[in-house]
Length: 104
Image (tube, rainbow, N blue to C red; front, top):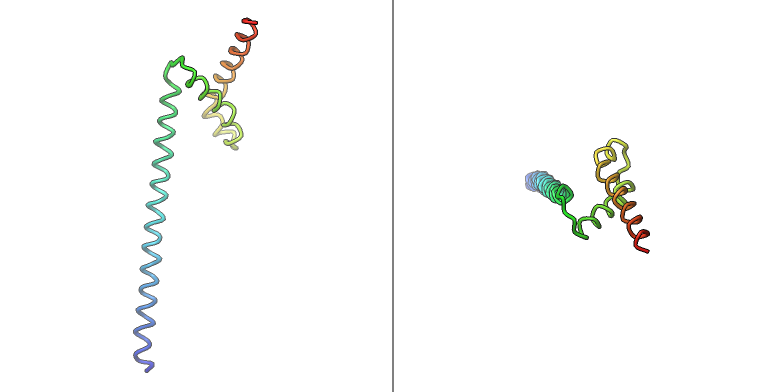
């Protein structure tokens, strides 16, 4: 009976190893898809920001990013990469505020 048990235990180990390998492949594929989504979304946002668009949505996007990015980016080097977005939106917001006060 022990002779029969050994091949079954070995087969279980082999199947478990195969399951782990397949799970690792799936995890790798999911990470790659998540990275691709982040890259595409980032590219889209940067393209939108680079347009000289004067629409309300464009200004709101810049203002939102200027407000949210500093809290999201914890490393100074990362924040420096987006300094142009954060600073230009802050400047624009200040101009909008002064424009509003001029109209009163």
